Image 1: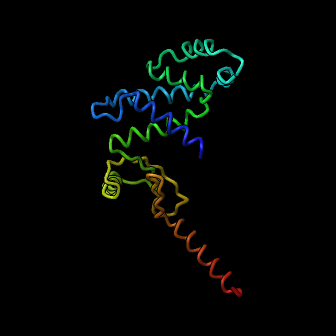
Image 2: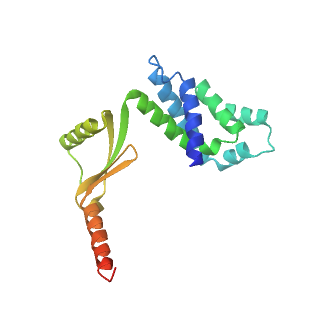
Image 3: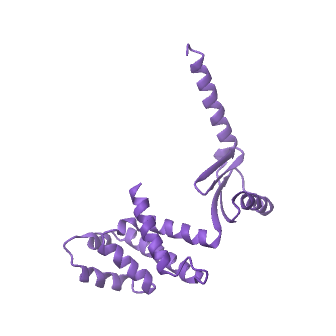
Length: 191
């Protein structure tokens, strides 16, 4: 999709400007920029008048720059410059996607991958550690897990990691079995 491609380009440019992926890259700087952008994104989403003002084509760029300086003056200089660039190029609507891409690049530079795990019941710390080790063996990277509980899975868990979903839940197995049975029933009707 085009918005992902645009977001990836802006994120890559920002990542390079932050000094990454150089070996001497200061991870604190990379993290600060990610936090700044997340804060700006949340502020823009929460204030529709500010978003409308920044998107208005008849408001001159110097005025928008002054507004950005007043609202986001606490951001790191690179973060503020980047948000200003997005507004000037009318790309502020891509900010959330840019943040996702930027964080993905930062994680890749660290050798880190994030996994979202949904389990039917709460996992013990020992179970979480075993799952983390298994995922680290599978990916060859350090894994950070975010756990949530969803009793509708009935049993087991679902893992989402690197755009891959591993469904080891009872509900998933039942759904797959239902699809097989429905398919077999239709095939038996003369096909």
